[in-house]
Length: 87
Image 1 (tube, rainbow, N blue to C red):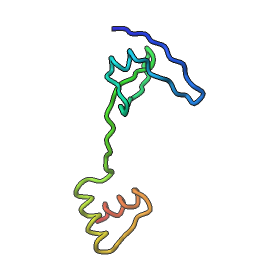
Image 2 (cartoon, rainbow, N blue to C red):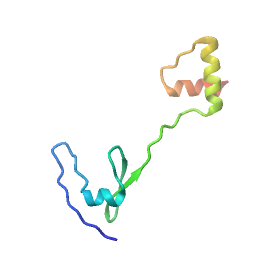
Image 3 (cartoon, rainbow, N blue to C red):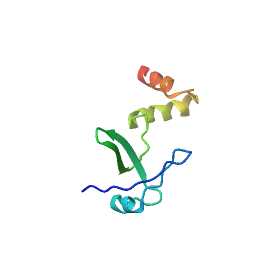
Image 4 (cartoon, rainbow, N blue to C red):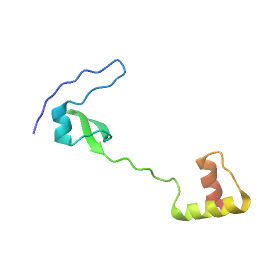
């Protein structure tokens, strides 16, 4: 199915997704969208955004144990991961 609709880009780089397209994609207030580029043009897909921890459950256990024992605070994720790997 090919559906063509038009929209203008605002000075802030925003567009309003035409109602017909929103209905086809089931896009509602709060829906997250993924944008992609293909040879044919822009690809627009509804998507779900989930938070993902940089640590595994076992790493979190080690971090919690260290924090409880020593109160260690890391300035960034890289330093914390390096310390965990050294354990």
